[in-house]
Length: 335
Image 1 (tube, rainbow, N blue to C red):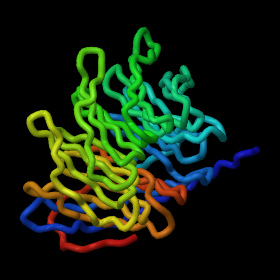
Image 2: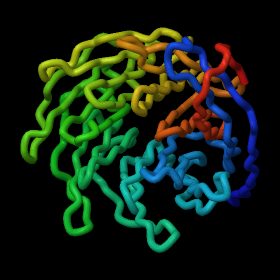
Image 3: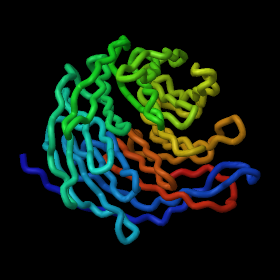
């Protein structure tokens, strides 16, 4: 099948005001750019490099698109992969990019000069790889086969170190804590499992219950953990005396929560209801600051890095938002 690649990147000067009290830091998100996908399968996952200048977007079946930030806009630099299998998840670590695929494998890509070259293929799962994440020389993958695999980089090769099998359903999301000493996994069994590193092994620290549907996304920020679920809620958990305690449930979404992301005291969530919601920690509560609605499709993925928010949609659109500070009039916005 011949694939026709179209390129249409639109800069939009849309300004969206925050909901919030003037007693707290306020600002606004500026819709910096809208990227229209090339192949029409919807944006399933995106990842930003640590320096914030490279964006990887899984927005075309088995293809990954690489964008570079230059001259104040995102420019397509490279795309690679194949029509199938579908890419479910992407993650950066330095000059390495990994993708979790629907054919049960993990593909490793290595930066050579200014181009990404195909590296090794990791096998070990027996079902679609739904989520991948890095922590130093460790890589974790969660799969439809109900397992979590831990991989370690040795002599420039990834070696499978351990398989965690405690979940009773497909593993939808995996995430490392900032220090890489804890691992969280969200599953279709409606639980979150938190694992702690003990030497070269990972031990189950705690099983978190409270959601009434599959847990689609988990993310850490310091001593906090957030989870998003098919039950249309977001739960905030906090670590106290080495135990995770449920602190708050956010119920503003009208559809399943597909993705959550932290950045400092900010939390973003993307939902099947077509909205991206931005929350801020004010005191000991999370307050809804902004509600962005995409009328044409569900939100599959959100990512936060510094002052940047990336949102990916089922209508094959990726939007990049930039944060600007300042006191503004409170408003609920729709686009």
